Length: 272
Image 1 (cartoon, one colour):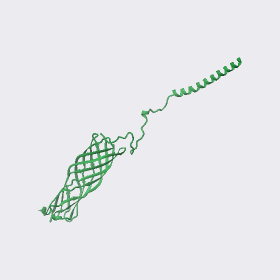
Image 2: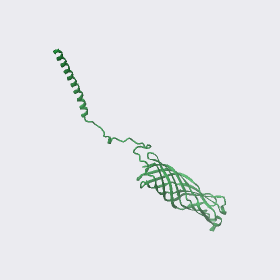
Image 3: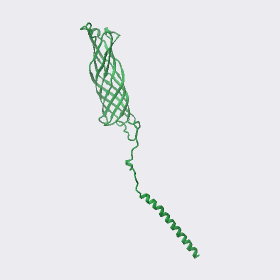
Image 4: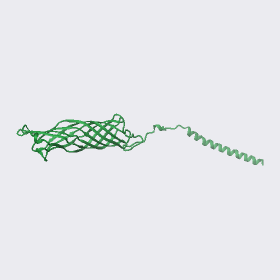
């Protein structure tokens, strides 16, 4: 009995010794792993942010427009002259023909062209923009006892109407942002060509300008891309001269007309 107890005691002691050794061996590598220096670990704050594509709306994308933004816009524009308050006077060989021209008026054709606009936001609500385009228009005359219902083709001209507008935006930092504006426009006429109508062979037009008002909206599509729609009403007069240049007849016509074009545009803008 005594021998059996001694054997049992020795066996338990041996097992305990073996278990303690195994635990010590297991703990030592774990301790070494925990205490080992970590190489090339990048702090979370320094990890690079995920890339946001040019056609993506990401968490970092600013919604709407605000102070300091620059918008570059490419639009299709329609220029629709209203031809209000038109009057034609003239002479043949120095003799007035105003009587037979009474009631005659000019008309100008509509035109569509691309338009480039640059806009800068001075504050969240206030911006200033400049449009640049050039359109070609045909000019004709009709009416009065001389012309009646017949149309006299006077010629064509290209018009460069840079317009500077200050606009108030009602909903800054929103996807849909309507605005109204007021500004001024100037008109240069270039590449003027007289029509071969058998009466006049020279055509010229003077520089003119006037106030302008507009209304429109921007809508953020995706990322920094916006859709824009805009309507401008300009108030300008045109002064044009047509003459024959023939010393024998020397026909001279002078036209005064309130063009007052309505300018309608729609296009895509990118915000910087």
